[in-house]
Length: 58
Image (tube, rainbow, N blue to C red; front, side, top):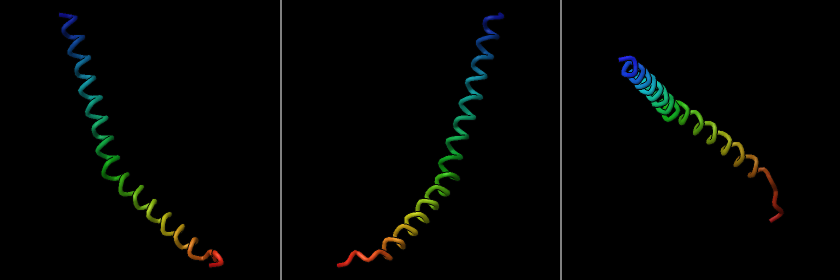
């Protein structure tokens, strides 16, 4: 019986760990993705603005 209880505890920890990892992935995919995309768009806009200021002599 002790071996069965130990295996059950291990399985419970694996299930909890999987749930936590899934929550982190979902959070990263929804919240962080939007923030990173917004930041990259802002940087790209700034770079484009600075490039337009350059006189290439053409």
